[in-house]
Length: 91
Image (cartoon, rainbow, N blue to C red; front, side, top):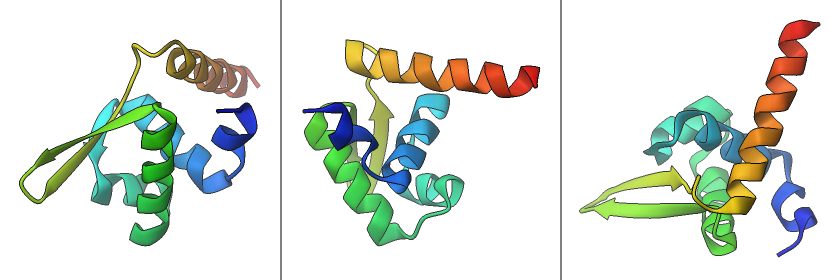
């Protein structure tokens, strides 16, 4: 996995940022918050699961996606998002 794989798509970054901020949520909430359609969000979620940055839990038909804060790469990405958010608040 490379940095380019993670940040190669604006939509993927939106999904990742949404989950980094909220921790876990279902795909409908992710699509709403990231302003993406269901198909696009599902493709990004699949890629992020493959990269090991998020995980999927299934409860029957309900799918919950969780940001894997315990992964050092995910932790670094979350720190990056937080540092940009703090910088924006200062300006």
